[in-house]
Image 1 (tube, rainbow, N blue to C red):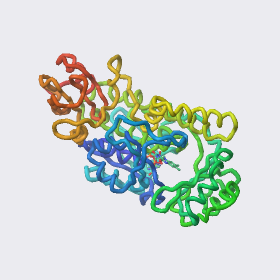
Image 2 (tube, rainbow, N blue to C red):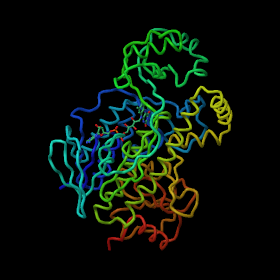
Image 3 (cartoon, helix red, strand yellow):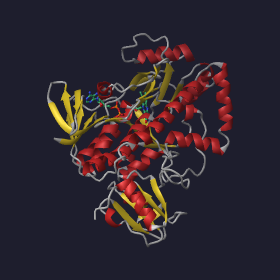
Image 4 (cartoon, helix red, strand yellow):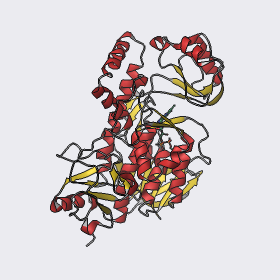
Length: 474
Ligand SMILES: Cc1cc2nc3c(=O)[nH]c(=O)nc-3n(C[C@H](O)[C@H](O)[C@H](O)COP(=O)(O)OP(=O)(O)OC[C@H]3O[C@@H](n4cnc5c(N)ncnc54)[C@H](O)[C@@H]3O)c2cc1C
């Protein structure tokens, strides 16, 4: 019997497995595919995800495989640089092939002791008071205390639970791929300037090392059920731009729609959902993988606490309470971005107006904080603005704050040097550091780096330690 079975070894499942292993939870990941994904789609890791990687000591490893790009220009592909002074030590975007980030996360989980079984599709689920029985497609039955569906947008687990997935079906199909071109950049620029006023989504832009990212509407391309071909791209480019720019040597080609849906519940008893299994939306802004990895980061320590037996009664339910509204907000911003891609006169006018408004620092900052997920503030009740937000990677006497969070424990950052974490020291570290660059006396950080308490009073601190970390050990 495992503590947790995770269905799906995509980025969400792998991240969750690693987070659970930090707390010695016995984890089995079941992955339907026998081999890792082979397409080489480059995804963008945004600031908050890069921060999470830094918090678990993974960032250096990941940086070696990616390409840093400026953080701005992602909201509806409106070409505006990020505002100055973004509140992060990792204020850039990392372009990285999705199979590479998946491999690195899976390796991390396995190094920590997670078991991954490939070629195992979850096909049935039954739960009772003690646990969950998971049936595989070949009839084998496995038992665990909890099951987490990280099995993507068509999630079998979500369907087996009967959880509603309301939203909008796909209306517009788009072709997206990465390939080489046969003409100089200047020729491309000269031809495409102005085209996206009349055709959207449309772009052909360099993505590094001679590779171009190409996006064209799929309307008019036949064979919807088939994967797109290079000829489909050539045909669409010729129709729209009058030339196919000599595109060749595709790295990957895909077709996606703009279906937008959100699971009604993230938890049904001992079964929970995370990542695309819980929410789908168009890829504009590059947020899906980031959102899933961040779900896993929010859920991991809470589920581990439940299994280790110290979780306060309502802790596991805070996963839905915190993450469902975040996904709702992402869905909304992708809906807005899709409208802004329309070539109708009304949305075009709104796009021009928004582009002007983005010259105001506050507007630009709000939008980029949404896309990069650094603006998230969970509702922890009344308190200073920092309460419920993540704390940036500030300097502390040992170096960097995030370097102290690798083990996935809570942390009291104490500038007064007179507080204690007492009976919670098996779950929460204490750093007395009057030099920490903070404008409040002390903060209590959860294992996901969000600020759970601000203050300088021991009794108040103890109350909040109980709220998040349960009863003290003695
Ligand atoms: C064109 C395009 C561009 C994108 N660009 C970006 C980007 O730049 N940034 C970004 O953040 N996101 C991007 N995304 C979105 C991103 O790819 C997804 O959000 C992300 O893959 C979701 O991760 P996941 O682990 O939740 O699900 P998935 O990646 O779908 O993984 C689910 C896993 O579960 C397995 N599985 C399925 N059913 C079962 C079963 N019954 N039993 C066991 N295993 C099962 C699958 O084989 C798969 O390995 C893009 C998407 C598209 C289409």
